[in-house]
Length: 118
Image 1 (cartoon, rainbow, N blue to C red):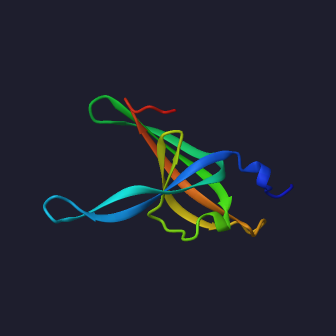
Image 2: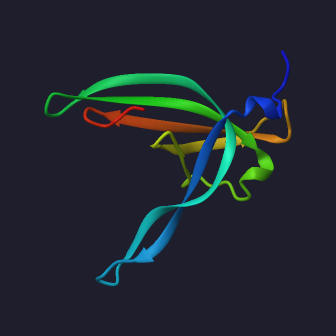
Image 3: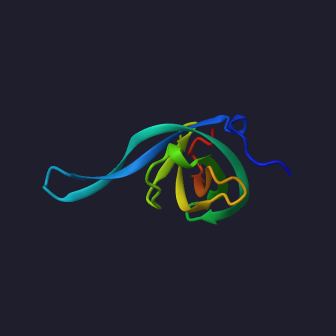
């Protein structure tokens, strides 16, 4: 099986970083702000659906996102990735041992009834 090439990174993903700020009461709050856009390969890995209160459904889908190691200088688990208007929460990441210039991030997308899915 061949490794990853730059041509496999076909999805443009926005990296969001958690930033500390102050609200109007002077309290510390955290929000996500855009940091950069990178090319990535996104592959769904698992999914599940569950019922929640109020006759609603929730779907949780995990994906493996592969990016160039140099495209995101500081990897942290509080990163989020935005793709097609949806925010994916980074669960964990590790180096791609087959292709040393790349990193695999495992992310989670949760969608509830009433939320756009694409």
